[in-house]
Image (cartoon, rainbow, N blue to C red; front, side, top):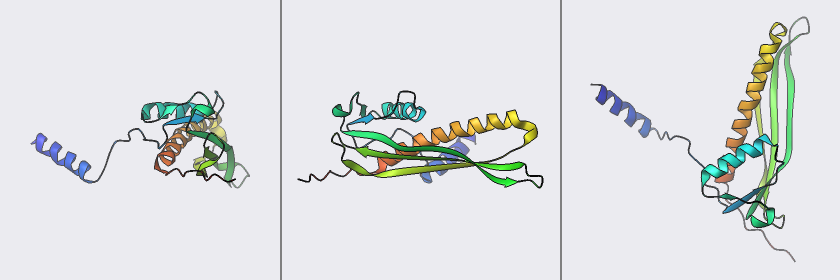
Length: 166
């Protein structure tokens, strides 16, 4: 009986199109990440690209078919609501990350992109330490989500051949 239920559940999951998230196949043979060594996004992208196995990380921009470069990286904390006494009740964490992908001569291979992530959280002055830890966890979760979204966008985009103008 259990085997029948397991087989039925497995067929339902397979029938709905569910797949485990695997590695992404990027359309570039080699990619250079024009990011500082201490960049957390850069470290996450390097890990994800190494797992993909279809793209190698180049040591220099001249050795790469494409070059990924951040354009903007802005994190902000916005107050959403205040209590009747003027204390913060809710905040929004917002992260905007802009990027571009160019060839070795600086010509755009894909249109520049921007990703914006937001997370809302309640705030309580009596639990400051717990709320700081929650905020740190939310930023870390947003970082993981940011890397996954960048990889998804890089894998989905069809690179254009740069037009040579004289």
